[in-house]
Length: 137
Image (cartoon, rainbow, N blue to C red; front, side, top):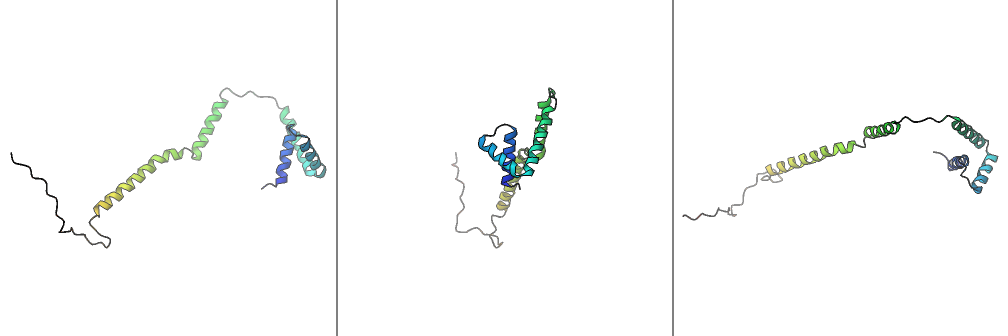
């Protein structure tokens, strides 16, 4: 992990190269450059790279460049699995429903068995409901 001072130096150098430093930032950068040869070397390397990049000729992007980039981004998202959740969701729901159906069927088949595994008997004192008699015409 980078040291906070290093992060601060990189931020100061970047702001300096982008001409975004205020007077306080410039004085901090100058003090750092005065005491650190490594910082001087880093800033010099960044300035050289910036000069080289600015010296490159401008290129015109092909007309379909943005479409191709967008397509590659979508493809990478698909491959990383962001869309796999959408595909897997129906299967997960079906799995839950199948498990629930199996559990209900199992419970219905074993309703007349108690915890010890003995078959339960019906209470003889409970009268079974008789269907209502239909009047004769």
